[in-house]
Image (cartoon, rainbow over all chains, first blue to last red; front, top):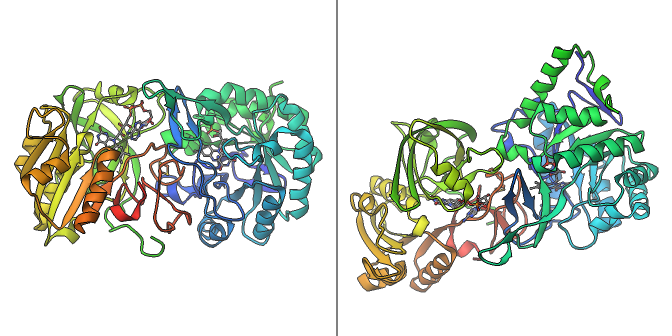
Length: 300
Length: 272
Ligand SMILES: Cc1cc2nc3c(=O)[nH]c(=O)nc-3n(C[C@H](O)[C@H](O)[C@H](O)COP(=O)(O)OP(=O)(O)OC[C@H]3O[C@@H](n4cnc5c(N)ncnc54)[C@H](O)[C@@H]3O)c2cc1C
Ligand SMILES: Cc1cc2nc3c(=O)[nH]c(=O)nc-3n(C[C@H](O)[C@H](O)[C@H](O)COP(=O)(O)O)c2cc1C
Ligand code: FES
C-alpha cells in the first residue's frame, strides 16, 4: 500500500500535514504528537521581521468552529531559523515554512533568507484576513496575485505553494492566476471572514472586530472550493478547512486534493492528524486501494 | 523577560489530553460547580496551573481553561471549581459523578510556592479567581510560609470559605456588604490592616489592576494570574497573549503567552 504523495518533487510519506498557525512550529505539540508520523509540518506564518499581531481577544468559539484574529504575530525569520528549524530537523518529516508579508519585498526577503535553510518548501500566505496593510489584496486580485507569485518564484530556491483566500468571487480564477505566476502547488482554504457580537456588552467579541472562521463549520465550503480549484489547474492542490477525521480528509482527496492539512481540530483533539493518517490507511485497506494517488480527484 | 525566563519552574511535565472520571460533583452556590477528577495529571499539578476541560458537545470545539483549585498527588485527584456561565461551562456542569470528561493538562506555569517559604503571603482571590488560591494556600503552608487569604465575593454565597479557613487565616469582603467588609478585597486588606511580603492574586481584571498598583505603592512583590481566551492551551496558536514590559524570550515581541509563560506573572512584568 502506498500512501506517499509527491508535491512539486517533495515526497511526503503520507498526505497529512498540519495547517499553518494551528501547530506552532511543531514543538508546542511534540509532547502529544509524534512528528515523525506526519507527512509534513507546516509552520506558523513567519515574516522578515517580528510582528506583534493584533490586540486581544484574538480567538473565540462559534458553532462547530472558531474565529481568530491573531494578526500573524511571529518572531521573525531570523529567530525562526535559529530556533524552530533546528528543532524540526530532528524529525523525519517534511518542513513547509509558511511565509507572510505586507509587501512583495517582505515576502521575497524572507524567502531569500530561507533559501539555504533546511526547509523543504514554502507556503506563501497571500490570504490572511487579519492584517490590515493589504496582504489580502495579493490574494483577492488575480493580476496582483500572479505578479506576486512570479516575484516570489524568482526569489525562491525551493518549491512554492500559494495559499489561497476563500474570500473571493471566483476561486478558479485565483487558482489559475497562481499557476500562471509559476506556483508549484496551491493550498486552500484559508479562513473565511466572520464576526461575533457580544449581545450583553453590545460590542464585538474580537478586538479586531472580524476574524477568520475555521473548523468543521467551513468544511463543505472548503471541499467545494478545492474541487473548483483542482479543476482549474494542473499543479497539485492541498486541501484544508475543518478536517476532523479521515472521512473528512478523504472528501478533500476525492475532490482533488493531493494532500490535506489539519488545523483547528488540533485544538480539540491534538491527535487528529494521527487519526486521519490511520483512518486513510484503513479506508485504503477496506476498499483495496493500492495507492492513495488513485483517490486524488476520483470524484467528478 | 528576555533571557531570564519568567518561569519559576514548576510543572514542566508532559502535556496530554486524557479522559478523567468525575469522582465527586457538588454545587457550592448557584452556578458554582465543584468537581473532583480522578486523573494521573495530578502528579504534576502545582498551584496556579490549570487544565483545559472540554465540553461534551463536540460542536463546542475549544477547551475551557479552569484553574486547579486543589490536588492530591498521592490520591491522583484534581479539584476544579468553576462558574457555569456560558454554554460550554454549563455543558461541563451537566456531567454527573461517575461520568468521564476530557481534559488537557497540566497547563501553565503556576506560583513559586517554594520561593515564598520564609515569607508572609497575602492571597487575594476575587470571584471566580478564588479557587486557585486554595491550593496555593495549602502548598504555601506545606512549604512553611505564613499566609492569609482575603476573599472577595459579590454577596454572602461564600463558596470555598470554609476550605480556606481550615488552612489559614481567612478574611472576606462582599460587594453588597452582606458578609465581611463591604467592598472589594483591597478594602478588606485595608480594614483589617493586613500586612505581608508577597501578594498572590487572581480575579477580574479591574481587581488585578488595583492589586498591582497597591503592591507597587507598598513595594511588595506581587504575582497575578491572568485570563484570556484560549484555543490551544499549549503555546501554538498565540491566541492568549498579554502585553509585556520587556520583549518576551519566546515571541521576540512585547507579548507573552498566558497559557505557557503564565497564567502567573510578576505584576510589574505585564501591562494590564
Ligand atoms: C488560566 C485560566 C484559569 C481559569 N480558571 C477558572 C476557574 O478556576 N474557574 C472558573 O470559573 N473560571 C476560570 N477561568 C475562566 C473560564 O475559562 C471561562 O469562564 C470559561 O472559559 C467560559 O466558558 P463558557 O463556556 O462559560 O462561555 P462561552 O461564552 O461559551 O465561551 C466562549 C469561548 O470564550 C472563552 N471564554 C469566555 N470567557 C472567558 C474567560 N473569562 N477567560 C477565558 N476564556 C473565556 C471560552 O473558553 C470559549 O472558548 C479561567 C480562565 C483562564 C484563562
Ligand atoms: C489560530 C489560527 C491561526 C492561523 N494562522 C495562520 C497563518 O499564520 N498562516 C496561514 O496561512 N494560515 C493560518 N491559519 C489558517 C489555517 O492554516 C487554515 O487554513 C484554516 O484554519 C482552515 O483549516 P481548519 O478549518 O482545519 O482550521 C490559521 C488558523 C487558525 C485557526
Ligand atoms: S492558547 Fe494557544 S497560545 Fe495560548
